[in-house]
Amino acid sequence: MEKREMLYEGKAKRVYATEDPELLIVSYKDDATAFNGLKKGTIAGKGVINNEMSNRLMQRLEKAGVPTHFVEELSERETLVKRVQIVPLEVIIRNIAAGSFSKRYGVEEGVVFSQPTIEFSYKNDELGDPLLNTSHALALGLATQEEIDTIRRLAFQTNDLLRAFWSSCGVTLVDFKLEFGRLSDGTVILADEISPDTCRLWDAATGEKLDKDRFRRDLGGVEDAYAEVMRRLMEHEDC
Ligand code: UDP
Image 1: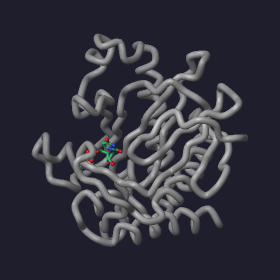
Image 2: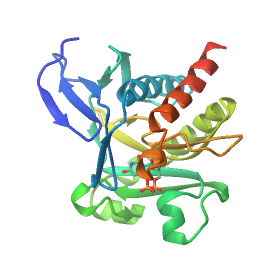
Image 3: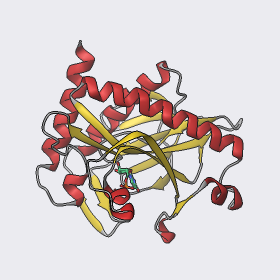
């Protein structure tokens, strides 16, 4: 599939058109940002890891009944995906308190929830991705009630599948962000990426952070952490 004009350049990825109007090519960069773009840097090799990790996880999800945008891995950094119109909601599932949840509600990081939580924010950089409820999302016309119901169901199903998978790799899935999109016929599918950029992943034995928090919080060993979770995933896939 031939890469045509660049349609969009985001913080961590570039998106290209192809000769097929229903398909796009995503190219993963090593660029990293945090705090709504205030902190910028590079994580060497991240693009390669995120591309492969996201593709492997999406293929697992697809097999288990979660529809995704994944079509085919084209190279180390590039993947062919289904073209969608992104629903402008960041969908966050949490199993353990961390990050903005801990700050907002005064809960110590590491407190395990009796059941997973879901929250939505409005995907809008200018506004700083404000938290919103489903009633707000309906009022703003961001999605229909039916779409929100589907997104909620798919997000919790994704959590069950990913949590079990990461657990078998000795990794605790603390929280993560998903984005969904609409195909041209309106079907809602999982899009964007699933990687250490978008998930909090802790070593199950030591609690060591193996994700983008090492970059956000200047903990050092960022590249090693990404490589380590990738190694764990590959080890598991070999069995
Ligand atoms: N997240 C993300 N993109 C965002 C905001 C959050 O991928 O723009 C992910 C983040 O990596 C974490 C989860 O969503 O796994 C929850 O993030 P949180 O709301 O705690 O925000 P943060 O503390 O990262 O600002």
